[in-house]
Length: 436
Image (cartoon, rainbow, N blue to C red):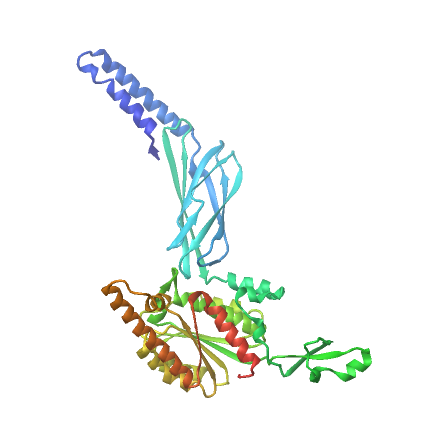
Protein backbone atom coordinates (compact mmCIF):
# COMPACT_ATOMS: atom_id res chain seq x y z
CA UNK A 1 0.00 0.00 0.00
CA UNK A 2 1.04 3.59 -0.61
CA UNK A 3 -0.39 6.89 0.69
CA UNK A 4 -2.04 9.03 -1.95
CA UNK A 5 -1.69 12.77 -2.38
CA UNK A 6 -4.98 13.31 -0.55
CA UNK A 7 -3.62 11.72 2.63
CA UNK A 8 -0.29 13.50 2.29
CA UNK A 9 -2.13 16.81 1.88
CA UNK A 10 -4.20 16.22 5.01
CA UNK A 11 -1.10 15.39 7.05
CA UNK A 12 0.65 18.49 5.71
CA UNK A 13 -2.36 20.67 6.60
CA UNK A 14 -2.41 19.26 10.14
CA UNK A 15 1.32 19.95 10.44
CA UNK A 16 0.74 23.58 9.52
CA UNK A 17 -1.43 23.92 12.62
CA UNK A 18 1.66 23.33 14.72
CA UNK A 19 3.39 26.46 13.34
CA UNK A 20 1.20 29.01 15.21
CA UNK A 21 1.73 26.92 18.37
CA UNK A 22 5.11 28.68 18.67
CA UNK A 23 3.24 31.83 19.64
CA UNK A 24 -0.14 30.43 20.65
CA UNK A 25 0.11 27.16 22.66
CA UNK A 26 -3.58 26.40 22.09
CA UNK A 27 -2.77 25.51 18.50
CA UNK A 28 -0.58 22.62 19.68
CA UNK A 29 -3.60 20.82 21.07
CA UNK A 30 -5.54 21.47 17.86
CA UNK A 31 -2.68 20.05 15.78
CA UNK A 32 -2.54 16.94 17.98
CA UNK A 33 -6.28 16.38 17.67
CA UNK A 34 -6.16 16.89 13.89
CA UNK A 35 -3.32 14.40 13.50
CA UNK A 36 -5.17 11.88 15.62
CA UNK A 37 -8.37 12.24 13.60
CA UNK A 38 -6.45 11.88 10.33
CA UNK A 39 -4.71 8.76 11.63
CA UNK A 40 -8.00 7.18 12.69
CA UNK A 41 -9.66 8.02 9.38
CA UNK A 42 -6.68 6.65 7.43
CA UNK A 43 -6.69 3.41 9.44
CA UNK A 44 -10.45 3.03 9.01
CA UNK A 45 -10.16 3.68 5.27
CA UNK A 46 -7.42 1.07 4.97
CA UNK A 47 -9.32 -1.50 7.06
CA UNK A 48 -12.74 -1.05 5.44
CA UNK A 49 -11.67 -0.92 1.78
CA UNK A 50 -11.70 -4.01 -0.48
CA UNK A 51 -8.14 -5.17 -1.22
CA UNK A 52 -6.84 -6.31 -4.64
CA UNK A 53 -5.15 -9.32 -3.04
CA UNK A 54 -8.64 -10.84 -2.85
CA UNK A 55 -9.06 -10.51 -6.62
CA UNK A 56 -7.98 -13.72 -8.37
CA UNK A 57 -6.69 -13.36 -11.98
CA UNK A 58 -6.43 -16.26 -14.43
CA UNK A 59 -4.67 -15.79 -17.75
CA UNK A 60 -6.30 -17.47 -20.77
CA UNK A 61 -4.23 -17.90 -23.93
CA UNK A 62 -2.94 -20.43 -26.42
CA UNK A 63 0.39 -22.15 -25.98
CA UNK A 64 1.47 -20.74 -29.36
CA UNK A 65 1.73 -17.08 -30.38
CA UNK A 66 2.71 -15.60 -33.76
CA UNK A 67 5.58 -13.16 -34.11
CA UNK A 68 4.89 -9.64 -35.35
CA UNK A 69 1.09 -9.81 -35.12
CA UNK A 70 -1.52 -8.96 -32.48
CA UNK A 71 -2.29 -12.06 -30.43
CA UNK A 72 -5.39 -11.96 -28.20
CA UNK A 73 -4.91 -12.62 -24.47
CA UNK A 74 -7.75 -12.84 -21.95
CA UNK A 75 -7.56 -12.41 -18.19
CA UNK A 76 -10.41 -13.72 -16.07
CA UNK A 77 -10.82 -11.77 -12.81
CA UNK A 78 -12.85 -12.98 -9.82
CA UNK A 79 -13.61 -10.62 -6.91
CA UNK A 80 -13.58 -12.46 -3.57
CA UNK A 81 -14.11 -9.27 -1.58
CA UNK A 82 -17.47 -8.66 0.08
CA UNK A 83 -17.61 -5.24 -1.56
CA UNK A 84 -17.36 -3.89 -5.09
CA UNK A 85 -13.88 -2.88 -6.20
CA UNK A 86 -12.48 -0.75 -9.01
CA UNK A 87 -9.39 -2.67 -10.07
CA UNK A 88 -6.50 -1.83 -12.40
CA UNK A 89 -4.43 -4.70 -13.85
CA UNK A 90 -1.13 -4.91 -15.69
CA UNK A 91 1.31 -7.75 -16.35
CA UNK A 92 4.80 -8.66 -17.56
CA UNK A 93 4.81 -9.95 -21.17
CA UNK A 94 7.54 -12.08 -22.76
CA UNK A 95 10.77 -10.18 -23.38
CA UNK A 96 10.74 -8.03 -26.49
CA UNK A 97 6.95 -7.85 -26.73
CA UNK A 98 4.61 -4.88 -26.80
CA UNK A 99 1.18 -4.77 -25.20
CA UNK A 100 -1.99 -3.01 -26.31
CA UNK A 101 -4.92 -2.15 -24.02
CA UNK A 102 -3.03 -2.50 -20.72
CA UNK A 103 -3.19 -1.40 -17.98
CA UNK A 104 -6.93 -2.02 -17.93
CA UNK A 105 -9.45 -0.79 -15.36
CA UNK A 106 -12.78 -2.40 -14.54
CA UNK A 107 -15.27 -2.53 -11.70
CA UNK A 108 -16.13 -5.84 -10.05
CA UNK A 109 -19.11 -6.32 -7.78
CA UNK A 110 -18.79 -8.57 -4.75
CA UNK A 111 -18.30 -12.15 -5.95
CA UNK A 112 -18.42 -11.10 -9.62
CA UNK A 113 -16.24 -12.59 -12.37
CA UNK A 114 -15.34 -10.62 -15.50
CA UNK A 115 -12.94 -11.11 -18.39
CA UNK A 116 -10.77 -8.50 -20.09
CA UNK A 117 -9.16 -8.76 -23.51
CA UNK A 118 -5.84 -7.28 -24.59
CA UNK A 119 -3.33 -7.96 -27.36
CA UNK A 120 0.37 -8.72 -27.37
CA UNK A 121 2.77 -8.30 -30.30
CA UNK A 122 5.93 -10.46 -29.90
CA UNK A 123 8.97 -9.16 -31.76
CA UNK A 124 11.05 -12.35 -31.61
CA UNK A 125 10.46 -16.01 -32.32
CA UNK A 126 11.34 -18.73 -29.83
CA UNK A 127 10.31 -19.41 -26.28
CA UNK A 128 8.73 -16.73 -24.14
CA UNK A 129 7.38 -16.44 -20.62
CA UNK A 130 4.68 -14.32 -19.05
CA UNK A 131 5.64 -13.15 -15.59
CA UNK A 132 3.95 -11.31 -12.75
CA UNK A 133 0.51 -9.72 -12.69
CA UNK A 134 0.07 -6.39 -10.93
CA UNK A 135 -3.26 -5.42 -9.35
CA UNK A 136 -4.03 -1.99 -7.98
CA UNK A 137 -7.04 -0.22 -6.48
CA UNK A 138 -7.86 2.96 -4.56
CA UNK A 139 -9.32 2.89 -1.04
CA UNK A 140 -12.90 4.02 -0.46
CA UNK A 141 -11.93 7.49 0.76
CA UNK A 142 -9.08 7.83 -1.72
CA UNK A 143 -6.36 7.96 0.93
CA UNK A 144 -4.45 4.79 -0.08
CA UNK A 145 -3.29 3.02 -3.20
CA UNK A 146 -3.60 -0.71 -2.54
CA UNK A 147 -1.44 -3.11 -4.55
CA UNK A 148 -1.03 -6.84 -4.98
CA UNK A 149 1.35 -8.90 -7.09
CA UNK A 150 0.50 -12.34 -8.43
CA UNK A 151 3.21 -14.72 -9.59
CA UNK A 152 1.61 -16.32 -12.65
CA UNK A 153 4.40 -17.70 -14.91
CA UNK A 154 3.32 -19.14 -18.24
CA UNK A 155 5.59 -20.57 -20.92
CA UNK A 156 4.63 -19.97 -24.56
CA UNK A 157 6.11 -20.75 -27.95
CA UNK A 158 6.35 -17.87 -30.41
CA UNK A 159 6.08 -19.13 -33.99
CA UNK A 160 6.79 -17.45 -37.32
CA UNK A 161 3.90 -15.47 -38.74
CA UNK A 162 1.74 -18.23 -40.25
CA UNK A 163 -1.00 -15.85 -41.38
CA UNK A 164 0.42 -16.13 -44.91
CA UNK A 165 -0.21 -19.88 -44.83
CA UNK A 166 -3.71 -19.39 -43.48
CA UNK A 167 -4.39 -16.77 -46.15
CA UNK A 168 -3.00 -19.05 -48.87
CA UNK A 169 -5.20 -21.90 -47.63
CA UNK A 170 -8.28 -19.70 -47.86
CA UNK A 171 -7.35 -18.34 -51.29
CA UNK A 172 -6.53 -21.82 -52.57
CA UNK A 173 -10.00 -23.00 -51.64
CA UNK A 174 -11.39 -20.05 -53.60
CA UNK A 175 -8.96 -20.50 -56.52
CA UNK A 176 -7.52 -17.04 -55.81
CA UNK A 177 -3.89 -17.86 -55.03
CA UNK A 178 -2.74 -15.07 -57.35
CA UNK A 179 -3.70 -12.62 -54.61
CA UNK A 180 -0.98 -14.19 -52.45
CA UNK A 181 1.62 -13.66 -55.19
CA UNK A 182 1.39 -17.24 -56.51
CA UNK A 183 0.73 -17.44 -60.23
CA UNK A 184 -0.89 -20.79 -60.83
CA UNK A 185 -0.58 -20.09 -64.56
CA UNK A 186 2.98 -21.31 -64.09
CA UNK A 187 1.51 -24.80 -64.27
CA UNK A 188 1.21 -24.38 -68.00
CA UNK A 189 2.98 -27.65 -68.73
CA UNK A 190 1.03 -30.80 -69.44
CA UNK A 191 1.23 -33.28 -66.58
CA UNK A 192 1.88 -36.93 -67.20
CA UNK A 193 -0.31 -38.44 -64.47
CA UNK A 194 -3.99 -39.02 -65.32
CA UNK A 195 -6.30 -37.25 -62.88
CA UNK A 196 -9.93 -37.38 -64.12
CA UNK A 197 -12.37 -37.08 -67.00
CA UNK A 198 -14.26 -33.85 -67.55
CA UNK A 199 -16.21 -31.95 -70.16
CA UNK A 200 -14.25 -30.75 -73.18
CA UNK A 201 -13.09 -27.12 -73.13
CA UNK A 202 -12.18 -25.02 -76.12
CA UNK A 203 -8.54 -24.67 -75.02
CA UNK A 204 -8.05 -28.45 -74.69
CA UNK A 205 -5.73 -30.25 -77.10
CA UNK A 206 -7.27 -32.87 -79.37
CA UNK A 207 -4.92 -35.51 -78.03
CA UNK A 208 -6.53 -35.05 -74.61
CA UNK A 209 -9.99 -36.09 -75.86
CA UNK A 210 -11.09 -39.49 -74.57
CA UNK A 211 -12.95 -40.91 -77.58
CA UNK A 212 -14.38 -43.91 -75.76
CA UNK A 213 -15.94 -41.73 -73.06
CA UNK A 214 -17.08 -39.32 -75.76
CA UNK A 215 -18.88 -42.15 -77.57
CA UNK A 216 -20.59 -43.28 -74.37
CA UNK A 217 -21.79 -39.81 -73.33
CA UNK A 218 -22.42 -38.49 -76.83
CA UNK A 219 -20.47 -35.34 -76.00
CA UNK A 220 -16.80 -34.45 -76.02
CA UNK A 221 -14.94 -35.61 -72.91
CA UNK A 222 -11.32 -34.71 -72.11
CA UNK A 223 -8.72 -36.40 -69.98
CA UNK A 224 -7.23 -34.11 -67.35
CA UNK A 225 -3.67 -34.68 -66.23
CA UNK A 226 -1.82 -33.47 -63.20
CA UNK A 227 1.83 -32.82 -62.56
CA UNK A 228 3.82 -35.55 -60.86
CA UNK A 229 3.44 -36.06 -57.14
CA UNK A 230 5.61 -37.75 -54.52
CA UNK A 231 8.65 -35.72 -55.51
CA UNK A 232 11.12 -34.38 -52.96
CA UNK A 233 11.81 -30.80 -51.93
CA UNK A 234 14.56 -29.88 -49.46
CA UNK A 235 14.68 -26.31 -48.19
CA UNK A 236 18.16 -25.05 -47.29
CA UNK A 237 18.20 -22.06 -44.97
CA UNK A 238 21.37 -19.99 -44.80
CA UNK A 239 21.68 -19.16 -41.08
CA UNK A 240 24.90 -17.16 -41.41
CA UNK A 241 25.69 -13.49 -40.98
CA UNK A 242 24.24 -12.41 -44.33
CA UNK A 243 20.77 -13.34 -43.10
CA UNK A 244 21.10 -11.11 -40.03
CA UNK A 245 20.48 -8.01 -42.16
CA UNK A 246 17.26 -6.13 -41.45
CA UNK A 247 14.80 -4.77 -44.02
CA UNK A 248 11.58 -3.05 -43.06
CA UNK A 249 12.15 -3.92 -39.42
CA UNK A 250 12.30 -7.67 -40.20
CA UNK A 251 15.47 -9.73 -40.46
CA UNK A 252 16.23 -11.55 -43.71
CA UNK A 253 16.27 -14.85 -41.82
CA UNK A 254 12.70 -14.32 -40.63
CA UNK A 255 11.65 -13.60 -44.22
CA UNK A 256 13.45 -16.75 -45.34
CA UNK A 257 11.76 -18.86 -42.68
CA UNK A 258 8.34 -17.48 -43.62
CA UNK A 259 9.08 -18.27 -47.28
CA UNK A 260 10.14 -21.79 -46.30
CA UNK A 261 6.87 -22.34 -44.44
CA UNK A 262 4.78 -21.11 -47.39
CA UNK A 263 6.80 -23.21 -49.86
CA UNK A 264 6.26 -26.25 -47.65
CA UNK A 265 2.52 -25.56 -47.70
CA UNK A 266 2.37 -25.33 -51.51
CA UNK A 267 4.61 -28.39 -51.97
CA UNK A 268 2.45 -30.42 -49.58
CA UNK A 269 -0.63 -29.40 -51.58
CA UNK A 270 1.14 -30.65 -54.70
CA UNK A 271 1.67 -34.02 -53.04
CA UNK A 272 5.43 -33.65 -52.56
CA UNK A 273 7.53 -34.36 -49.48
CA UNK A 274 9.37 -31.51 -47.76
CA UNK A 275 12.57 -31.54 -45.68
CA UNK A 276 14.57 -28.64 -44.27
CA UNK A 277 18.21 -28.05 -43.35
CA UNK A 278 19.43 -24.87 -41.64
CA UNK A 279 23.17 -24.31 -41.61
CA UNK A 280 25.62 -21.64 -40.46
CA UNK A 281 29.16 -22.78 -39.62
CA UNK A 282 27.44 -25.90 -38.29
CA UNK A 283 24.16 -27.68 -38.84
CA UNK A 284 21.61 -25.65 -36.88
CA UNK A 285 18.56 -27.81 -37.55
CA UNK A 286 17.52 -30.81 -39.64
CA UNK A 287 13.86 -31.57 -40.28
CA UNK A 288 13.40 -34.92 -42.07
CA UNK A 289 10.96 -35.38 -44.92
CA UNK A 290 7.37 -34.43 -44.12
CA UNK A 291 4.26 -35.20 -46.10
CA UNK A 292 0.55 -34.48 -45.99
CA UNK A 293 -1.73 -31.84 -44.55
CA UNK A 294 0.17 -31.63 -41.25
CA UNK A 295 3.57 -31.05 -42.88
CA UNK A 296 3.51 -27.29 -42.34
CA UNK A 297 2.46 -27.57 -38.71
CA UNK A 298 5.21 -30.08 -37.96
CA UNK A 299 7.80 -27.99 -39.81
CA UNK A 300 6.90 -24.89 -37.78
CA UNK A 301 7.01 -26.85 -34.52
CA UNK A 302 10.57 -27.96 -35.24
CA UNK A 303 11.92 -24.70 -36.64
CA UNK A 304 10.17 -21.88 -34.76
CA UNK A 305 13.15 -21.09 -32.51
CA UNK A 306 15.81 -21.01 -35.24
CA UNK A 307 18.01 -17.91 -35.38
CA UNK A 308 20.74 -16.71 -37.71
CA UNK A 309 24.24 -16.29 -36.27
CA UNK A 310 26.97 -13.73 -36.99
CA UNK A 311 29.30 -16.34 -38.50
CA UNK A 312 30.34 -17.30 -42.01
CA UNK A 313 28.19 -20.04 -43.51
CA UNK A 314 30.04 -23.27 -44.32
CA UNK A 315 28.58 -24.13 -47.73
CA UNK A 316 30.85 -27.16 -48.09
CA UNK A 317 29.32 -28.59 -44.92
CA UNK A 318 25.84 -27.74 -46.19
CA UNK A 319 26.39 -29.57 -49.49
CA UNK A 320 27.92 -32.56 -47.71
CA UNK A 321 24.98 -32.84 -45.30
CA UNK A 322 22.42 -32.57 -48.10
CA UNK A 323 24.04 -35.39 -50.06
CA UNK A 324 24.27 -37.53 -46.92
CA UNK A 325 20.79 -36.91 -45.54
CA UNK A 326 18.86 -36.69 -48.83
CA UNK A 327 20.37 -39.11 -51.36
CA UNK A 328 17.23 -39.25 -53.53
CA UNK A 329 16.83 -36.68 -56.30
CA UNK A 330 15.23 -33.56 -54.87
CA UNK A 331 14.67 -29.91 -55.58
CA UNK A 332 17.21 -28.24 -53.27
CA UNK A 333 16.09 -24.65 -52.59
CA UNK A 334 18.80 -22.52 -50.96
CA UNK A 335 17.48 -19.27 -49.46
CA UNK A 336 20.36 -16.88 -48.87
CA UNK A 337 21.65 -13.33 -49.24
CA UNK A 338 24.54 -12.40 -51.51
CA UNK A 339 26.98 -10.23 -49.59
CA UNK A 340 29.52 -9.77 -52.39
CA UNK A 341 31.27 -11.62 -55.22
CA UNK A 342 33.62 -13.36 -52.77
CA UNK A 343 30.65 -14.69 -50.85
CA UNK A 344 29.02 -15.89 -54.08
CA UNK A 345 32.23 -17.57 -55.19
CA UNK A 346 32.41 -19.47 -51.90
CA UNK A 347 28.95 -20.95 -52.45
CA UNK A 348 29.17 -21.68 -56.19
CA UNK A 349 31.35 -24.80 -55.91
CA UNK A 350 29.38 -26.50 -53.12
CA UNK A 351 26.03 -25.74 -54.76
CA UNK A 352 27.30 -27.04 -58.08
CA UNK A 353 28.10 -30.34 -56.36
CA UNK A 354 24.42 -30.65 -55.46
CA UNK A 355 23.50 -30.93 -59.15
CA UNK A 356 24.09 -34.66 -58.98
CA UNK A 357 21.59 -36.02 -58.12
CA UNK A 358 19.64 -32.90 -57.14
CA UNK A 359 18.19 -29.90 -58.95
CA UNK A 360 19.53 -26.76 -57.25
CA UNK A 361 17.67 -23.47 -56.95
CA UNK A 362 19.32 -20.49 -55.23
CA UNK A 363 16.94 -17.77 -54.00
CA UNK A 364 18.63 -14.50 -53.07
CA UNK A 365 17.14 -11.83 -50.82
CA UNK A 366 17.86 -8.52 -52.51
CA UNK A 367 19.72 -5.77 -50.72
CA UNK A 368 17.26 -3.04 -51.69
CA UNK A 369 19.08 -0.12 -50.00
CA UNK A 370 22.27 -1.07 -51.85
CA UNK A 371 20.44 -1.32 -55.19
CA UNK A 372 18.72 2.03 -54.64
CA UNK A 373 22.03 3.67 -53.74
CA UNK A 374 23.75 2.15 -56.76
CA UNK A 375 21.17 3.73 -59.09
CA UNK A 376 21.02 7.08 -57.30
CA UNK A 377 22.15 10.34 -58.92
CA UNK A 378 24.93 11.93 -56.85
CA UNK A 379 24.69 15.61 -55.93
CA UNK A 380 27.95 16.06 -54.01
CA UNK A 381 31.47 14.64 -54.14
CA UNK A 382 30.69 12.45 -51.13
CA UNK A 383 27.52 11.20 -52.82
CA UNK A 384 29.50 10.38 -55.95
CA UNK A 385 31.98 8.32 -53.95
CA UNK A 386 29.19 6.44 -52.13
CA UNK A 387 27.21 5.81 -55.32
CA UNK A 388 30.32 4.55 -57.11
CA UNK A 389 31.11 2.15 -54.26
CA UNK A 390 27.53 0.90 -54.11
CA UNK A 391 27.42 0.49 -57.88
CA UNK A 392 30.64 -1.54 -57.91
CA UNK A 393 29.38 -3.84 -55.15
CA UNK A 394 25.99 -4.22 -56.82
CA UNK A 395 27.58 -5.10 -60.18
CA UNK A 396 29.82 -7.68 -58.52
CA UNK A 397 26.75 -9.28 -56.94
CA UNK A 398 24.92 -9.45 -60.26
CA UNK A 399 27.99 -10.87 -61.97
CA UNK A 400 28.27 -13.55 -59.29
CA UNK A 401 24.62 -14.53 -59.73
CA UNK A 402 25.05 -14.77 -63.51
CA UNK A 403 28.09 -17.02 -63.07
CA UNK A 404 26.00 -19.19 -60.79
CA UNK A 405 23.32 -19.48 -63.47
CA UNK A 406 25.92 -20.23 -66.15
CA UNK A 407 27.11 -23.17 -64.07
CA UNK A 408 23.64 -24.74 -64.41
CA UNK A 409 22.11 -23.60 -61.14
CA UNK A 410 18.68 -21.98 -61.20
CA UNK A 411 18.60 -18.61 -59.46
CA UNK A 412 15.99 -16.03 -58.49
CA UNK A 413 16.40 -12.65 -56.85
CA UNK A 414 13.56 -11.04 -54.94
CA UNK A 415 12.85 -8.24 -52.53
CA UNK A 416 12.22 -9.41 -48.96
CA UNK A 417 8.48 -8.84 -49.36
CA UNK A 418 8.27 -10.81 -52.64
CA UNK A 419 10.63 -13.62 -51.65
CA UNK A 420 7.99 -16.27 -50.89
CA UNK A 421 5.99 -15.61 -54.05
CA UNK A 422 9.05 -15.74 -56.32
CA UNK A 423 10.28 -19.00 -54.83
CA UNK A 424 6.88 -20.67 -55.10
CA UNK A 425 6.39 -19.52 -58.69
CA UNK A 426 9.79 -20.94 -59.60
CA UNK A 427 8.89 -24.22 -57.87
CA UNK A 428 5.62 -24.43 -59.84
CA UNK A 429 7.46 -23.71 -63.09
CA UNK A 430 9.92 -26.51 -62.34
CA UNK A 431 7.01 -28.87 -61.73
CA UNK A 432 5.24 -27.81 -64.91
CA UNK A 433 8.37 -28.26 -67.05
CA UNK A 434 9.14 -31.67 -65.52
CA UNK A 435 12.65 -30.56 -64.56
CA UNK A 436 12.58 -32.53 -61.35
